[in-house]
Image 1 (cartoon, rainbow, N blue to C red):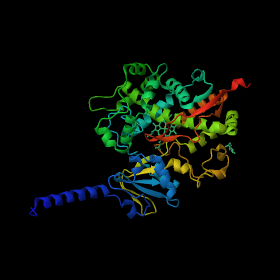
Image 2 (cartoon, protein in one colour):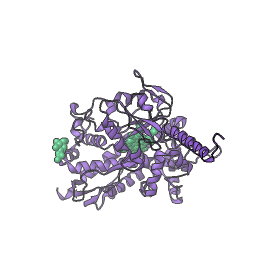
Image 3 (cartoon, rainbow, N blue to C red):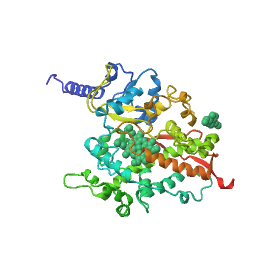
Image 4 (tube, protein in one colour):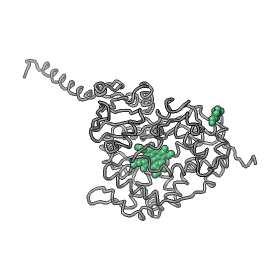
Length: 464
Ligand code: HEM
Ligand SMILES: *[C@@H]1O[C@H](CO)[C@@H](O)[C@H](O)[C@H]1NC(C)=O
């Protein structure tokens, strides 16, 4: 004993423990200071993401604000709970991270690979290392084998007047993704309903998955229960399982444990959830935003309706979709994790292993430096060289580099077909309940429109 009194001893020990914890928690608080990177100050135990912990604003809003706060800097730092994380603003630096020096940044850093969640295990979006390479080739071959054409007329039947846009689009996308992956059946609808469920419990899980992945795994949480017998039966006869069989033994990649290989049906189920979380949901967000903007601007809507592709050049509808992706990118932030110490060229910036790097896609798309009158929805900007950025890394709705979106072509094909069909049959107008701004919020690692958007659908046949 150092001191006679038990109480003094006890208090010394308590003070020491508190000091150690404090040191652990604040260890990286000067990380960006010593690197001369401007940064958002941190609070012990919380870091600089208190806005999110207390639900004051979304992660995207925070990144957008920090992006704007330091106009002349290429990088901005933060401390997320305890670990430093970096926002990269400069398109040249982004090019290095996403493409040139991909070897250092090949992971998204979501640390969820041990999860038992069917949505996540064997999911390309979450995979890393060799598994990622193999899955990427596999899903690529699957996509190349897929062929589909769809007839949306039955899903649109009865649409007339003031309409809940998301409800209508879900009906349409259920048809599209069923046609693509299943054939006949309701599996897409069933899985989509589970994934889109936005109860508080689901929001909490999504929050844990995002911020404390290790707790998500530890508690064995899942977003997706094991498939019902009905879904399994449908999958066994689905187009998807045929594609998987044609591609070969890709399902064997997904080792669940040493003896227990993943079956084709289980792999089909994971792939179905991959297509819904990474394909269906961003398409839904994009189409909702696009219809909203088209309803608000008659001139643009009419030009998109009348556009036809001439000699392979980009038509006006394509530019309209491109502009919706700029102003309302379904993925507002792209993340990468530094896998080995990285010296940023021609500077003294050293990025350590395990640091998360954020590419602030939405903030870049809304930066006046890159896009003149960036807040305006104006597809014509893509005709006019002066009002769009010359840097191709300043337009990143699908990301870039070896890990960019694998479904870009499919997504554009779906969005274009759906939009063309709707514009053919309806005039879109705002109605009394149309919101004055689009209610976008964060969801998982992307964005979603979580409040109803209503627009008036006026059938065009009445007019001819
Ligand atoms: C408008 C629709 C879509 C948008 C805006 C979008 C956007 C993105 C973005 C930004 C990423 C991250 C890229 C990066 O980190 O560099 C991504 C990844 C991915 N997307 Fe898409 N996507 C869309 C539709 C689709 C569709 C239809 C599929 C269907 C298969 C799909 C499958 C994927 C997959 C599997 C990944 C992960 C790729 C990897 O990690 O290697 N996406 N998407
Ligand atoms: C519609 O978009 C065009 C640009 O394509 C713009 O000039 C016009 O002001 C917009 N109209 C409205 C009502 O916003």
